[in-house]
Image 1 (cartoon, rainbow, N blue to C red):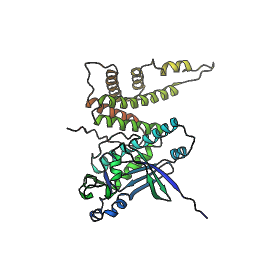
Image 2: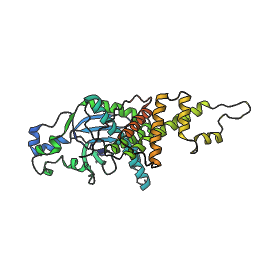
Image 3: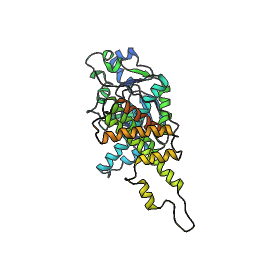
Length: 339
């Protein structure tokens, strides 16, 4: 009588700067090469809810299982377009998670350790477990991730693992960092809009760090614009009235005018401030970043988008995105451009 094998799949990634989950590996075991892989692969921290499962391995591999998404990929009839969309949704989770991990390390350990980079489908890879045991994974051969994947095996080191950067340059991160991370992830994933916004802000910071300032600014502005549009639609809904003669204060045609492409965001932000929906200080920041965005779009020769413009945009995007969420994010806005 054959028994059923329980199969569970995760989507995984490595951060661009690797870390130890908890304490660094035992030096004695590292010298005994046959046991290196076993210790590197150990799941040190595990978190579970009905909506997601998070695993942190000793060598810094981060694995995420989202039941909703996993249920979709089992459909053999899934088209290539739907598979691309499926990957896009998983990458939103991973990029959001990366941003929140960076923030948790700063908040808990006062350590601006990570150099945030966008996670793409070149960097993420799938991991398979059968009856709770590792049963294989794809290799992210076009990404730095493959370098760390191979770093689990002593045979892949040209010299002793002890002298390889994948071993001796890692920084340990405590359980408190990951507890803080998971608490934030739970709040972020309750709202699809917030999840996508934090993913976009993560990408914005990644572009900022490598000097792609215009791209960084635009990614942050998209988040600001989305949140302002949401505030504006809510304001219109709450301002609507039905009259005894059957007419509506904000008819469909009037709503179309007030939310259409020809209704500028500068007017929207002014109205939101005048109605008390945003503070005057926030309005000034919105207006400032909006002007930067317009200068980038219209390629004004007198304007050069730089670090300070991106920093303003990232901080504004975070303020608008996180309002009422209960999440605190401290962005790491150091540079990561080589000399």
